Length: 462
Image 1: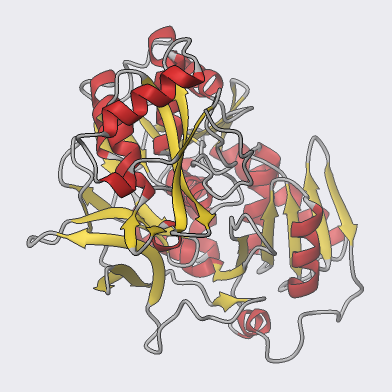
Image 2: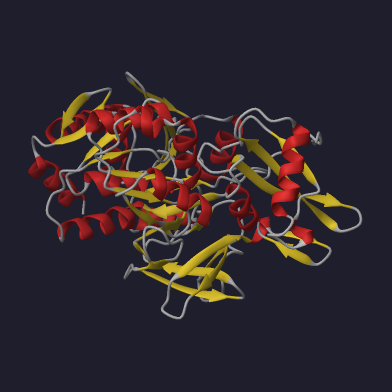
């Protein structure tokens, strides 16, 4: 597999592999940088199967380091930002030997002496027994320590090499919008480079930068999230920049509401829309949307099985994680199906629609509401630009429905509240009408480009 990856990069030769700040790097140049990085790692004593924290965002240096560590059979822990909490969690549960910072220069810092691995019989050590490289990802949990998720990196790379072998080399420029230390970003990077495409690296993951790159590089495929698409539309960036090169927008990381999908279709006419699906634990599955105007999709991946149990989607895949390093594998059934936590419905012909996350269900005196349902209704209002719905504890009903509203134009809190109540009156059941309505300048978005519903919020209401 390692030989096949190198051979493929050699065959791609002078094709552009990376656009960084408008500077093009060929596959030959990327391979040279990988070999240079291998020499630097060797000089610092980085041995096969050592756990290595890779601190860096998308750059030729960080990408070359990721591949060099893969070729060296290391367990890679990519971290875009060295948050104290994340670094403490990784140190405790992965026992990394080195920290590699992929900046202008490659900095290698030894964190622990040789022989200070994770311990005999650990999941990480079993990767070494198989002479396989590993990948550690951290969950995006907003409270408590993140889950430390271990993958066999050989499996992830091998899956892409196998799919790429059945395709002609790609000439597509693909924007790296999803995060470098997230399963979606790793998937985008491998999917692009292992088939000969060009990875376009943004300086910032903001609409102005992304749309500017689409125009400059004539991007045809944009992988992103529903929330990020709404930010583009709200800011009018699709009118400021020439995005006519776009042929396909893939969206994932969170559910898409019917109303937002309507907005996207309206503002990106002629662009095909494809819903993607995956988890940090099972990888990204190949999917097929019912249509560009539908939130129903099929998992059309031979390497992924799915089933629905009590309304929850469960998956089992070839790229499934090896386990958590700091939590019990309670999300796995006895027969190793992964409980995604996503509530779905399925049509007779096998199409799925994500209704929302089980943990986000709002229970009002026994009546249940999924935030996505109410958000879709609210977004249909001509006076609502964006919104987020969430639950708060209530002594009488258990929970109460709350909504943060970003209105269109300049509206007073009183006017927003009056409009929302009147707009919803004949569209939803009484228990779904928010008891607390706050006017906000913007809806909070996570670094993974999805709405945050679990943030502590000011109790001020309109």
